[in-house]
Amino acid sequence: MASAIDAVWCVGSGAVGASRSDKVVGMSDHLHARPTPLVTMADGTIKQINPFSGTEVWTVPGRGNRPLSVPAANPQPLGPDAHTATCAFCSANKLSTPPEKSRMVQDARGMWSIQRGLLPSELDNSVAEFRRVPNLFEIVSYDYWQANYGFEMHPDVAAFMEKYLSDPQGREHVLTIVRTKLAAAGKDSSELSDKELLDQAGGFFAGGHDVIIGRRHYVDGAEYDNQLASSGTLTPDEHEQFIRFTLDSLEDLYAKNRYVPYVAVFQNWLKPAGASFDHLHKQLVSIDERSVQADFEIERLRANPNMFNEWAVDYAGYHNLIIAENDHAVCFAGFGHRYPTLEVYSKSAAAEPWLHTSEEIRAMSDLIHACHAAAGPDVPCNEEWHHKPIDLDIPMPWRVMIKWRVSTLAGFEGGTKIYLNTLSPFDIRDRMVSQFYALRDEGAISPNIRIATECRVDRNSLKYNPVLR
Image (cartoon, rainbow, N blue to C red):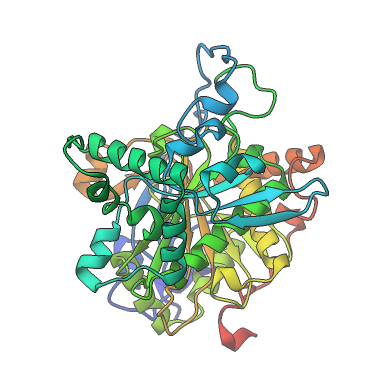
């Protein structure tokens, strides 16, 4: 006789009346049991359990019809320098950040390349479409790595630091940035010698918290301050280079610090999503341990190496939640998340994102770009990357979550740890599918994306699992 779990697993869009005990089975005690992420109650309430985290989410009927964003009520005309000098990340303020580690540029022939280790006098010799700079306020500091692990600066980094500080403009730039950081911490730097100030500059060269900054603050030709340049306003080609440049930085952070088991990659878009500036940027943070969530996920992965197929992509396919795919990646409406979430999975057999082929990277980029374009630049969101920790002995796929920060957690969530999500996975799917079709027709996203019923939805399409190769 089939169990309640098996019964719920096999239905099309959720079963009616499954008990709470049915849902909890498989979330902690029974690693081999099939989870039941989606349950539709008789009144239309959709209850969700995230199969990887155990997070419980409810979507109540009638609460999902609100717009995702509220347009600016009174947009202001842009001043003459707004496109280049609105914030510290803008192109005219390149010395407002710590020393640039590298940049992505495009030449007159349209060819893209990465330039590294430029001095201040060289910054204006090319146009940086994307810049990699250290975060002025590190989450995990350079001093942390030194004090706890005896970390020593990589020789290549030490050579660049010496070169930069030997340059008069470079030296003055670093001194200014150190003073700025101390002032932000409420410290007086006036009594410190230049040597004492420069002794605090190591993190600007060998730190493990970097920022990838886009060139534009506003879209080209913008006339008002609500015309921000987001991931979705980039062209598919530009977005591909944004992703490639981030991957280059990710690989480099692992290579430069042997004590780092994991580098977190994320993008906060707009202030409600935690952004300091409404200027397109990603962040990479080297950390010295896996999160509690990662440990829980890995435990389940050891019990079921194929869980990302069975409990994510295949489950989404069985419930008609696939939004789009291409030959090397797939996008679906996520379930069991605190915020409405789009999930993009790589189908590649390579676990490390930087080891993906050129075609596989472009495929991931195209779907991530389409997700941002379809949501629009006014929707606050977090883009979270997940990949195999470098010291993990089992593979897992590269996957990206795009979470719309369109609600505020309140007392109900805090007291019950049940999260109210205004949009169900089916609402998300319907909104995105129509937008994907329109954007593809306009040529705004990749023409190689298959949408909704065009998708093949092959079972076990993720090839990270060596058994499936």
